[in-house]
Length: 291
Image (cartoon, rainbow, N blue to C red; front, side, top):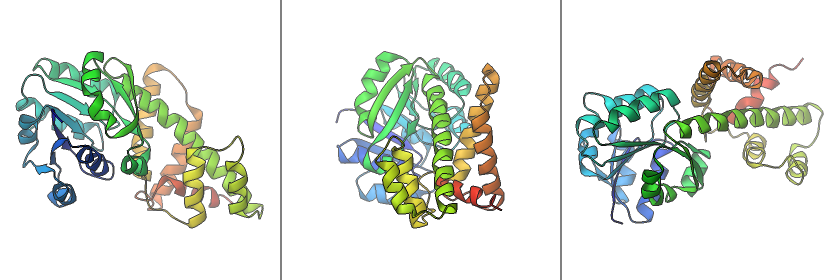
């Protein structure tokens, strides 16, 4: 593989994405807040960079996978960030889910230094990252998108150019709206079946054979049946994303009543100490409403 790749953020999503890059032979340099989390990647062939600046100076493409907008800003534009060390021609690919307006601002600043920022958030959760089956929605200059597409394709099953800077992150917010309302439908359906005394396994098998079938029903449904609360995506991260969704929706004047309801359910779970649990625990909020 000709292009050298750097990766900042080796957490629940970033680590498996890195492994998929290594599997297809990319020269990979990684950095994260905690070096210990990157040790399995180093054992698999990745190099370690002691700082973001070191990583940025050593690669052709730098990928970030970070929790929130301030984290991305610090890595890309901070005093010890990418902008202070990047060589002209560097391509930055941000796979985080952050504010689209902030993406446009960061892209403009980096462009002055000869660096291109692609906003490329992903959907599919931890299992999608492990299996290389993520969906990636990309914003930024199309010619740069085409140049970096092989790298993005190594981590995903679907890579779609959505438009200019910010379009990828805006599309991800649309994705989150669709997902959380689907999650609510899955949770309400299973809660009703449970309260009615139906066999949940039989019910789930029946639903998956009909028009209700889908990824979230399959994934969340089987986790609910198994009592599995391990996160593919946490309540805390979902609340962060929904905050971005509602902030953006307010800016452009689009009411989202369904999202408001689901966010209230997740807030209740967080107050109960469930912030680090998987989003499939949404059904527990409904169980608490029963008489």
